[in-house]
Image 1 (cartoon, rainbow, N blue to C red):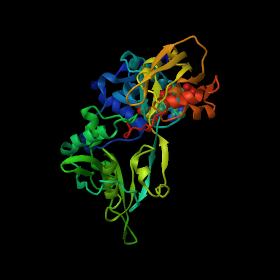
Image 2: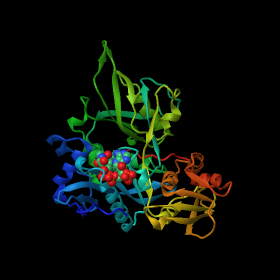
Image 3: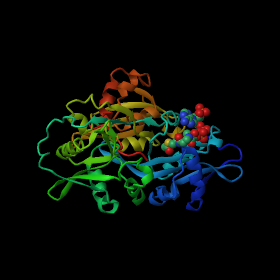
Image 4: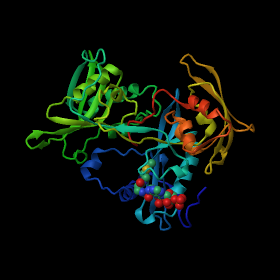
Length: 421
Ligand SMILES: CC(=O)SCCNC(=O)CCNC(=O)[C@H](O)C(C)(C)COP(=O)(O)OP(=O)(O)OC[C@H]1O[C@@H](n2cnc3c(N)ncnc32)[C@H](O)[C@@H]1OP(=O)(O)O
């Protein structure tokens, strides 16, 4: 537990201190929204989950918030504290305020029965030291106009609408299709507050970088929406040639035919030369359908970071891809209740061919030793214990156990969260 530096104290930040909180946020993140943008973009923080550190003079020196999220995990879902808005004033850096806030965040999350915390890292070097593991990756592509896709039956029969986004009118469709499209995919967090939903569809001019307002492409079977894409184009002419790049903000499709139809339309818009995709799962349908997956120059980056706060509750909340009986020796310097040996034993397979597991503390000898950071990295099924073992980050104490444990932890769909929070 990191005590606050002498004279500093951890405080709840009520809405009455919103202006002070925004000051810290703007100084830390180097931006200052204009009045029009502030008026159009809702405040997403939940005030009973917003905490700061006061300097000795009573001003806010650092802040953070936590979203109440439901995190899809392999075969289930778990309450999750989404760490967000972390910022320390530039003149208060490197005196331990983030470390103090992390300990507060862990204690408050556990008190709310949230066995895991997730975040998007502003810089990837920050959170590993606190036991967050990089648990998912995403891919971005720049797809040339007209890139060929392998055919999908039924795609051509779907109708398409191309409209200006109307946040009130399209909001329910976007929310519904987004949630259903991610069914079964670990990490696919939905926006569950009105403020998060409205922010997703906010479109102040300052966010457009000279491009058009947001457009929405809807794919329909009859009257039923099967997919949508939010995008904008920026008028560009190079040597008299049209060369607009389509910037996709978000997309979701309910099945392969809808995904194929959406991409077919977006990859063939007049006056454009390429499409910049939003963050995609590394196994997204587009990557399976592209005839030339190399031309779009895939760029891979870390997506969700995950911290297991309560080993037993977190491991019991997910399902397993193979039967396993393994003793994990977990190190956790920050949350000692997690440290020690945990036996994970699967029971009978369910009708979907996956297993649940009993998770018990044990004094039996361990098969695999790992830090809680690596446990977070493999928790969503997107990284392999075996690969972490090869990198020297996980230790196999009994030969053969890492292979079996890797198979059990793995999952057929790669984890991803489609939006940064
Ligand atoms: C989930 C999110 O919200 S991500 C957003 C994170 N926020 C930002 O990037 C905004 C700009 N940066 C900041 O506000 C601050 O520099 C913060 C929040 C990243 C760090 O705050 P500080 O109060 O300076 O952190 P603190 O002093 O507690 O440092 C703790 C440790 O993290 C390390 N650390 C802090 N920031 C970074 C960084 N950006 N990269 C690598 N290491 C870092 C420190 O060196 C220190 O290491 P040590 O324990 O080995 O001594």
